[in-house]
Length: 435
Image (cartoon, rainbow, N blue to C red; front, side, top):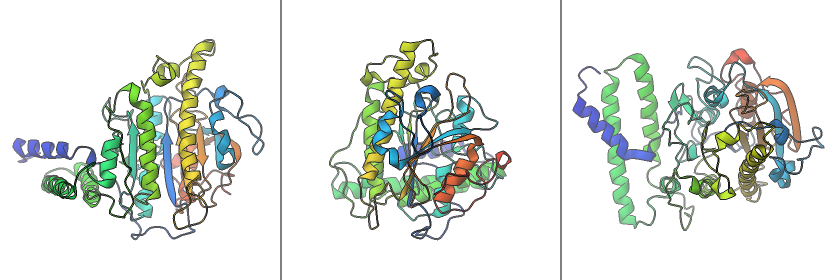
């Protein structure tokens, strides 16, 4: 660090800590002009829903063919039946060159990309947000449910603005609310005071980072530039919604890492995410339910084992598998809830529903969690993406690389990148996925 003093380092660390949940790393390089993509040239919004630890395919797969598929009674996806015609169930998608929890988590949305690849090691959400530059308050809104008890690492993070640069999900509904609408329950004068204090913290951290930039090597400069860009976006988002969109009357404020609140936090986060999308505060949003090797316990279902333990139940342990399926069906119900909210909301200023104009991706990081492989990783798409996808289908791609799925979603959003992530595993979109 050269002559950069320990005292200065501590001051910057304290300032960054004070900024707390408001600082998140975003990447908005190579952006298009503010205002983003033109109407009719791609889906209006991208939403990513994540759940961990893979699946048991025999309890996940639909029965039947591409158009006449059905969800067997008691199966993991059966709670999605009311939305069957708005879904595409994707089978036979593999993560090439990747196996096990952590590598799967790191590759899931990045495609294993490196800094020199076309997509620069970014995750799908950050690449889309940066390329389309929608001009919203939040380039992306990244929400979590008990993602941070183990800190920030490649087990607990799925979003990247550059290789090894995490975009941390916000686990607190109260924090998310205040980022969206300002301090909860505060008067206007209190709001103004809080804004001034936060802005001064951001200015302090920005100044220290700029000073440090001239005293470090090339690789460290690149990382600092990522953080400086995130601070620019942060400063623009500090003052509340500013668009006349009404804030919810109340917000959930509970300990964020205790198992008994998992279900309540998940529902609160999905409601806040829906509000942000409906108010056009963002057009790229993600919600991460725990993390790979997630230990969360579904106490509200009467279960006592952690999700990761349940995901390793062998077929001979019939009772254990039944508990795992019960937990997975609850996750399906949460995805169905999100889809239902979008489906029943008219598109603001447009035709159809918000779901019709969105691409909603349910992503996971492994195939069969008991085998620790990334073969036939389960994915579900909801929404027609403004006509980019023909829904109401079950597709088996017979070991196609998941990089092609990421390309397909980029194309549905109106982009034209030929590859995503590591280009050695294949180029172009998935054949047959588009409308």
